[in-house]
Structure formats: structure tokens, C-alpha cells
Length: 97
Image (cartoon, rainbow, N blue to C red; front, side, top):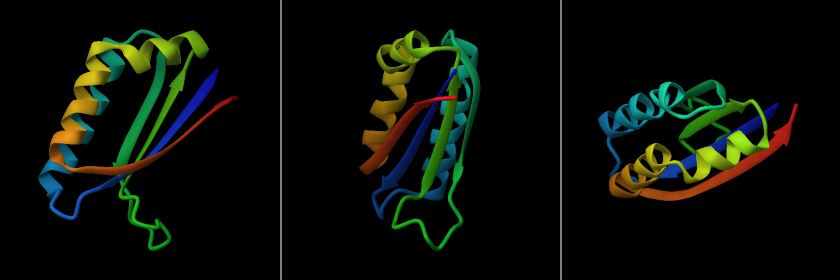
């Protein structure tokens, strides 16, 4: 199994409504992309976040499922939406569990 963790830093102009829409759209990926076992996303409340406001974890069946996810058109739509609402930076960590 693969754990995929993403921390996202958005623009100061990104609204709470846009962040919630990003989360809503991302959560739908489990129904569309094969190999996703679990997906969780939310707005960070920690004061230790170093400016990263949204956290995402996705658990995949295997590495092939992760690779399929990265290039899948539904995931690419999420990436495009994120850029549209004001993406500044991200940190990605993938590891086997």
C-alpha cells in the first residue's frame, strides 16, 4: 500500500469557499480513480503549519495506482482548479506502508 501526503499553500486571495470547493472536488476522486483505498483532505488549524493551509492524504493499493492517479484527467482537473484559485506551493511525500 502507498500513502500519499500533500501539503498545500494557497494565495492570500484564496477564499474559504474556494478551499472548501477544492476539498469537495478532491473527495469525489475516490469514486472516479481506480486504486484509491482512502482519501482525506481538510483545512489545517495548526499554528505550526509554516503557511501550508490544506492537507491531503490518499492511500493507494499500489505504486501503479499512484502513477495512474497523477496522470488521470480527474486529478488534472483538480490541479487546474487549484492553480485557478491561487496555488503558491506544495510538499508531497509518498511512502509504502
